[in-house]
Image (tube, rainbow, N blue to C red; front, side, top):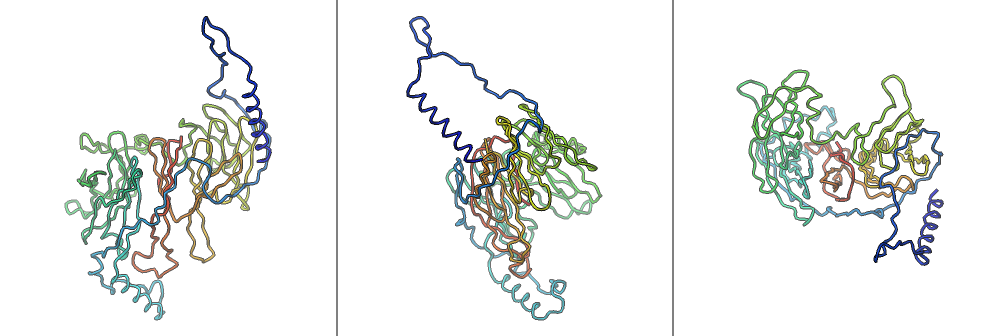
Length: 469
């Protein structure tokens, strides 16, 4: 297939060169001025309605290439970026008698002794800062760095990295036994950084949540509002932000905070709360050139039906009845699917050439993706259950679907994405170690990450995944 395409491109190039050498005079006299003749062309493709029968099935072999693709993607190595070491204040107050590891190791005296030794080592050594979160605002991204490898919440800092200059500096830090949260749940809301801190609600009983705001330039903090109950999630809305609060009942209550009036509105239905979001939903939503598209079919809870894709450029009824991901362009679309447990497949419907290209791509079923003008970047989760410790990795592929070209750009332990206009940023994190590599002691029982690579590129899509976990 790729040889076939290469021959067509070569022939087109030679024909173009010949036409440049012996170009006929296609101008027409207009008064005393000679103006070139104008040939009418269509700027946009004509709308078409097609079915599976209009496409010729073609099987293509994927070509795996290690390294960066021939595309305008910048890559910055951040593996040397360090945030220093700090001694969390909770370590001085730690009491090993409060920690019972017999649930893990039973009466195994040898293992319990090793655990005690590991505990004492962690309590006596400062912690090298590791990444808890990352968020993008414009041409900067902000890193939530944790220095508490014992409790995970008593020493943290927020760093700002400038994409243009490469400057990285600490913006604000929290340290003390009164701190009970790092910057894990930080959000971007109307050009500011916001996060939540919960504390006992002495007046009403239960807990209350304070929403705090950080100026992304000065690092100045202020309390935006206080809410009775525990805020589980919040996101930007046109007036301010929508939050979901748990008041100890089975259901969460959604409300909107207005930043201009400083008031909290009435309770919202799930549909009302979702409609107030300023960013289109990523999961389950599909777009073609930034315009919402319609995908019907697949599994409806009882049976499978054929998938139909409707965009502003075409309507195509396919014979496929399952998809885990759909990507749309004006001249093609891709459906990630699988036929059985032996493999996953990527189907590319080429509207212009009326071909349906089928390519095997293991792991795509579990991937998120970011589209570019004619290709896409797949972020593929890989699980290894061999006991090697490499049980959670993310591989980054740049895929040109009609060529079957897969460029493996790199891999890491996790990623964060951001979008500013058409510019997408992808921050890859390297896993410091897996919990299986060491004893499950203190906060070391979870994954810890360091900065690795930063990719910056253009994308026409209106949304990208924001985080991996």
